[in-house]
Image 1 (cartoon, one colour):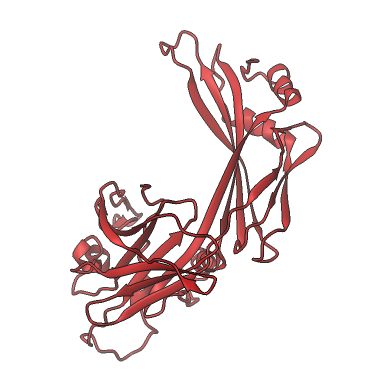
Image 2: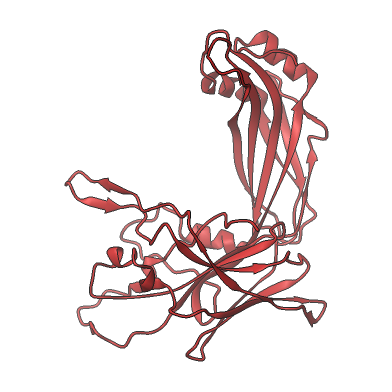
Length: 338
């Protein structure tokens, strides 16, 4: 069972309202559920973060460090149900588990000497809901949450389908004077693609006292592209510079006397997110004016938050023989032939 790749980010903005000179400080509290779930067809476990909005007499930032502020005092009745070919699939019930390795809140001291909490939410233990079982990519899933007060929270999302890399085919080529390309067939329900590449190599330093070969990597190339449509089946590509590959290695690899290095492979990773996820990220991205009211994006009925989908594929490629020869013979980086 995989651990969640990301944790819920509590939206403090949910607790704010439009400015007014008159307000009721102690108006009746409304139980508002906050939901965060990003489903992936490659996962054997789907993680859901379910909390509630809260208020209290103390500073809201410090209240966030108390799990009782945002967690429900009881286990919620929740499930995931797929709908495919006009038929509801067997529901996947959500159980609970406590994650014990959540990063503890970090603090910094600003120029006024005040302590600023960078990650104010309770840690290191986090309560998570989860459903065991792979999701059917051809189904549309609904997340249902039934609360003790009789209210229902729900959200529906299609899933980003699987897709494939079609270029490079076997080996990847980097030349000093020409560009190359990475090409793939788009996924159904995929709205945006994040392309990244990692160059993996091994390293040995004679006389260092370490007799083992160490495996290292360099992040080399990143791009983001929007899909033409969510239908899937289109061919998309990004262009990369071979010269940039060598210049990045020269900048990133430390100059170590007598070092011996060997090229391993280049891993291409392409992640695709659904339209709901992309809209949520865009709505909450930095850059807006501080005088601009930030809208709240949600696709959750009866609550607030998002239920979205993503899918990531990766493939490793050996360097072409020409590329490896160029790396060994033309650059003083310590690379050797295997």
